[in-house]
Image 1: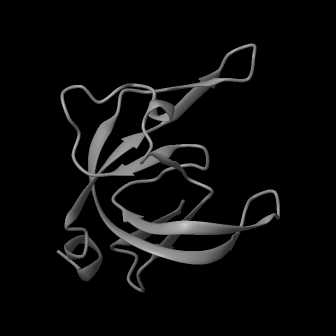
Image 2: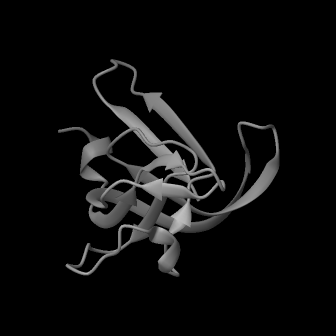
Length: 113
């Protein structure tokens, strides 16, 4: 197990954005509990639409995610809703990066919220 895997000691809840209805509202898949390293720090990021925005948190996660998906720090409860918009601590991913190590045996997945 490399350093990238060992650094993810925290837990977060992840909602993958699935489809939009005819009004432009998105639905989300069932929430999953994932391992991560969550750093609350302000960082300027450039989105896929070439917009400069300030990210409130940088989260190192254990899987591929996409802009528009949502993350919340903490463990999944039995009453965690399928709609993350109902929770004040669930934030949208603005940008997602992947960086493999030199031997390409591990990948650092980074979500900017």
